[in-house]
Amino acid sequence: MFRTIITEDYDLVSSEAFKVMKEVVKKGNAVLGLATGSSPIGLYKKMIADHNANGTSYKNIITFNLDEYIGLDKDHDQSYWTFMHENLFNGIDIPEENVHLPAGDVEDEEAECVRYEAELAKHTVDLQVLGIGSDGHIGFNEPGAPFDSVTHIMELTEQTRRDNARFFDDDIDNVPKYSITMGLASIMRAKQIIVIATGANKADAVYGMLKGPKTTDCPASVLQDHPDVIVILDRAAASKL
Image (tube, rainbow, N blue to C red):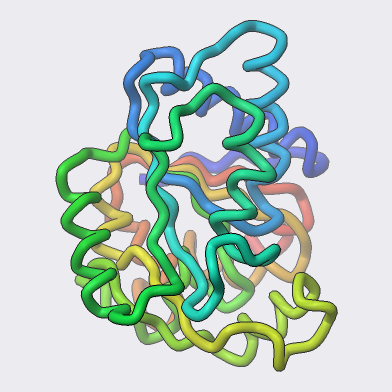
């Protein structure tokens, strides 16, 4: 079941997402599913600001990230390990041992998928944060990813790599071709999900998620079967609804 919130700009989108996050975090021992990319950065800034101003603690919070590029060392400036530490973890009091990301620099990526899914399965995610790709992907579950997938290796589409080239000196050749990602079934186990989307380039994907047929051509459409999804949009992302 979707609840859709449409706001005027990115800062208000981030504020609405933070309201949901704050309610979950204040319970003190929540499990958070986190995303990377530009969509959640404003939310993470508000989490850090609230921690600094109000002392909201993350000492008993556990986090699981959606995905990681294969082939990047965790200390690479574009790894999602680096992204999360620079944009959130270094600004709050979460213990490093409570932070979970798949490793993209291992010799056996298939074994890493099994390891990560097993660790994730020990917990129930209270709130999963998602962005949505212009092709409808969530996590790195590209079009065609099975709805029953768990943590797996995903070949990234040219569109996704082109969209992400801005983080790699605008050179698609520098963007990794594969990732490890939570599967769609892994994501769907979360109690509550928020989807953050801004910009006209996301409008078709948002429409497909909310109004289109449930199809692996738009992986986010699987969320039509989830009981509690909050979709937070700016007017440009909502323009096709």
